[in-house]
Length: 93
Image 1 (cartoon, rainbow, N blue to C red):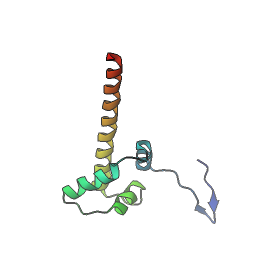
Image 2: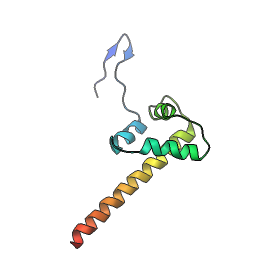
Image 3: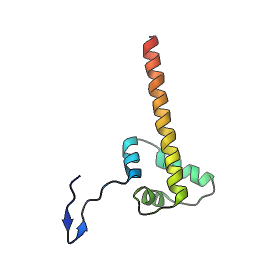
């Protein structure tokens, strides 16, 4: 990724690992919503903005990062299972 500098300030930042995870999940996913729901269910007060700040690396609240990763991992596992089931179905057909 090309990085331009203007007045000594980086114009374009490299994506954080958490941002890359979110990008890999694609635009139509509910990971952020599911993360917020899980945090609220656990009694942790937060906001969508606070979660996005953690994903962007501007906040390091452990409970936000850990819960986001747990939900993202579960979604990747679910997608792999769906693909495996679809392949099995095609093989049986």
